[in-house]
Length: 209
Length: 76
Image 1: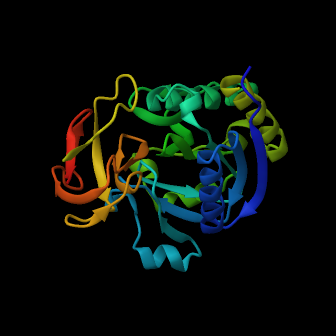
Image 2 (image 1 turned 135 degrees about the horizontal axis):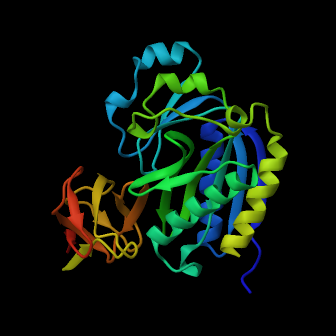
């Protein structure tokens, strides 16, 4: 039996501070520490992945920053995405040397966890071939972007639980012409973040332990 | 002379795009140094120097695609 995943809940953290802590965690896992699952929320920020199309920002940088939204360039795959309070961020820092060294399998497992999570909240979601992320009908609810260093993963999932969806009007999320949704919107009421955290931890233990 | 190769990233992943080079041609590199990053549709993968020496040449520029097993550059 594989060892259990070490879970850390960082609460609400600034994106850059969280990134620095995440990098330290990656180094510790590279050095031999066990797999970590980090949960947090970020203050409102747009992050630009390695494949960001400049046209995915629908407003000038200055206009966006004037609205109090920070913009950060980050070393993950994918296009632009938004983080804000109410969105559960999940950073699995996993050593893929112990999970098969297959990026495609890892990404597919993340999508399975995401679909399973939503099923537990009565939401039927799907992952669309060729498009990373998870959708409910045509609307995207979970974004996925991953980085890998020495076969140790970082970055991960952005799950819209109670996110202010109007913030997504600033961008083309992930470079797609897609509308975003949230668990709150689909259920018609805010959902306790702790319930989502408990379930996602349980699912990661199930899929990756 | 050592070739820097795009490694197997997973079953069915046949190619990647070089997002950026961290090392410069003519510069010294050490084993395990992060020299460039390859991206698939949603994942970024850091490529390390397989040998010590000088980065003699780069075969795949930033923004260009490369097949798995393809040569990214040469260390001499």
